[in-house]
Amino acid sequence: MHGRQRGWLIGAMVVASMVGGALSNLLLTARLDAQAADVVTASQVNIVDSAGRLRAVLAGEDERGLASLAFYGPDGTARGIVGAEADGTPVLQFNNPAGISRLSASVREEESVVTVGNEAARSVLIGSLGGTPLVGLSDGVRTRLQLTLGAQGEPRMSLINSAGQRGAGLVVGADDAPFLSLFDVGGVQRLTMGTVQGSTVVNLEDGTRPRLVLGVADNGRPSVVFYDADGALERDLSADTRR
Image (cartoon, rainbow, N blue to C red; front, side, top):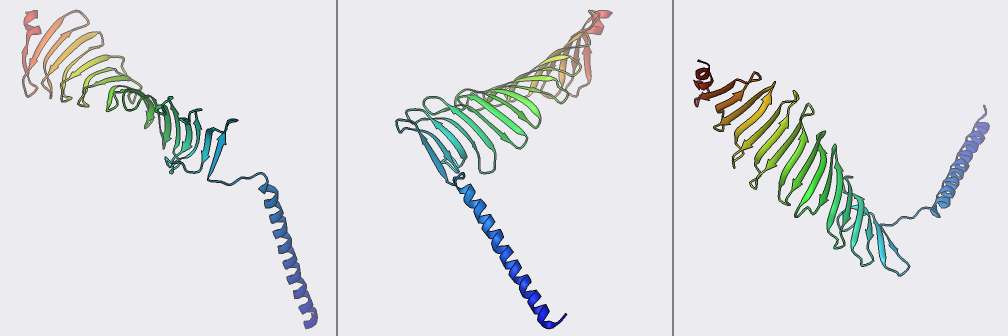
């Protein structure tokens, strides 16, 4: 190929590429212009009613730091909020006429929580924590009653004292054996009673181990057994009864 022909060919290719790039830019700009009529970009949109009162606000970041859609009553009080925290955690909240939350919900990682009532006073907590369902009754400071399921699906209930320690517990085990446990003020287990394979058992404990065990076997025979502080058998009155 002669040098002059090569020069013309390269020039034609450059011109063609420039025309193609310009045409692509024109098409892209045309598409953006076509969308401009349908797309609104704003950090906040206020929605008012026919009287000009604020009834809803769509905000990219509100005063709580949420990307949210908030609804307001005719008096300007926030009544409902749907949004997401800065880390993406979804949030739902419904308020009473005074603007105080009475129902809220959120999902963080694999944990979901719904709170019903006044969180500062009395409320019900319903959630799933670590894959375990949970229901709690709170006095505003701490949970006072807790319902949950064990690893094998066994139902558990705990009553919590004012110090935050468990005062009483009830469980139906995986073997369907029910047990009731009582604890002292410090949360130390002191009494356990239940039924196992048709036998009734009551353990009185010193905080470490059973010291007195009362029982009635499935054949109706009673037993009374004492243990020392080391857990060794000290006296068996049930044996005395059989003699």
